Image (cartoon, rainbow, N blue to C red; front, side):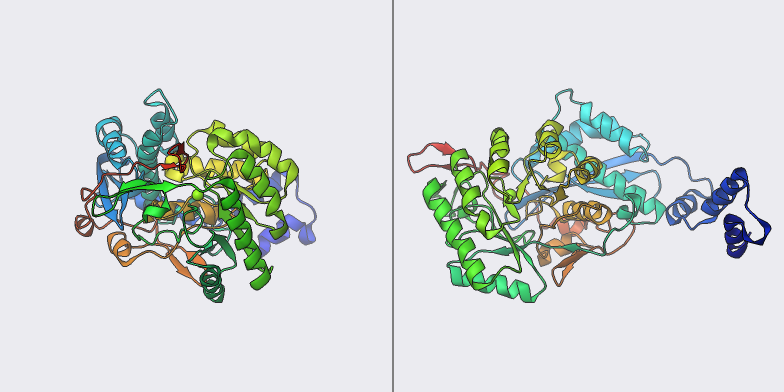
Length: 467
Ligand code: MG
């Protein structure tokens, strides 16, 4: 039956209406003959008696670029040359993730069927009995990402196609604003506007307020002022000092005021408060900046203080972003289902990986919450690719965090997503479309320098404060 005959049969044509049973048969026939590239690719891959795909080996790669530790995993299969890559980057505690993969997950998974992504994810989640550990989550996320990559390569389609297909051609990227003074910040924002950016996360110029000004995956060494306790090259102890609520709030209000008075109201602005004010200070801030209409006020409160969002929601209409520290469903579901946040910010590998993120995203869709997955330099390019494949395939994508990748990162990870005119694009290759060149990666071992960091900030009197 060709298209014309099918149409005639469905509409009744000159011969009159079809019976219900006949209509069903026509629709079933049409569906069966419709192009299905994923299925066709899978059938091609399995043609010729290809046996069930088994996991044959798992290798862990730890690298360090620009002071940032990254952990990636390759899962190899019984089909020669077919492997997948995933990201389990916990930049602060990389060896714990690598150990979890090598000592616990690898023996558990060798010989398993690589196609059973959901089953393996569920088993990895409960494997250690105690759930919700960021180390265990990153380890299982690395395996999970690799299994999706394998499935995509096997089917001959990008992972976003496995997830439902593209909803958009690319992802709008979050611009950043910071600098030594307000003029420098303004110039930087204007330069990015000329390059197509229209959403900005800014921090008050001068530094010291933390968060906010990250330019994403640039691979640039994190400054001492970026948060943390550490030592300089000469051995001097550096401690990040948190300003008082009064100083923090004044500087941010001045920053937003400058942007609105000098650049105007046609761009979206926001900041990452990064838990750096007290809950009471955060409520004052939320009310004070409402007049500047920020779409993205991130981490007003620490995960321990999320009940305060109920108060903020009643007193201010600012856009609320939260989630990069979440590791358990009970942390995000109440905030989403009670409509207390607008933007979900999970660090996908820390939360459990792509398989979880797609469920989080679909749940958020029904509560008007959009995505902006955590995507600074401490997410490997493979992690950025995973963020991108989820975001390309969901309706409720919000804004993409992530900068252009450094030359070193592009050399280690061929196939990095690209940004053109403020939009991040996939290369549309099968799987995640990104790889790890083992020879190049060996040139950037994570063994150089500290294996992680001991983040911490304190008040002027020495009292520990949240980072
Ligand atoms: Mg943040």
